[in-house]
Image (cartoon, rainbow, N blue to C red; front, side):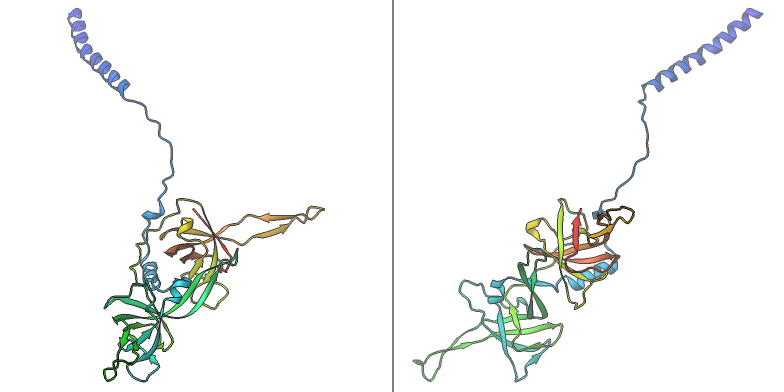
Length: 299
């Protein structure tokens, strides 16, 4: 009887031992993975622009215009309207001259052109070199007809008179006046903006505060910087605004030695319009007023 029970017990234990052995061998085949805490970094291009920032950019992206000497010289001048007025607005027809320079491709009918007034030279705060001329845009016009020559039908031998070009004003930021100039370059669509850090080191300076006579710019205002496409600056680059250089004297030192304090990040600027040697940026975060000459860096 005892032998029968022992045999029964051994027959029950054998399957359990075999199962445990197989399970142990299966576990030994699974590689060991060590898990440690890590920080997840979200690139800037994954962060969408807020609705407020998008609206600001849409309103501002067409405003700053920087012209070269050649563009200024090749612009047309408004000399009259369809009546005797000297100020015009949207819907008015005006006439311009000076757009017939050799080698220049004249606009086609319906082409949209910008009308500008005074020019402000933009100087590099480090070299004092003029990088371009900031134009004050007062409106836009549609090109209707190019200028040409008109002959005297009664006296074909007489000298001909030049005929001014015809434009229709389609939009005006303020009243357009006789003497305002027409930029002979079509309005290009804005580039898409993807906020991201620069792929290379950028060291720039604030060159001007757009559209303000103040000494300091605050959040949601536009600044111009002295670096452009030739320096690697692209639309969408996010640059850090750095604090101004400062020193502190060690009062506990008998020699009263002065020390340079490290520059700290005081805000961010989003580049939305680039030129060859300069760019415009929107101040998206500002902890202290931004002045001409302040430093920006990225990434």
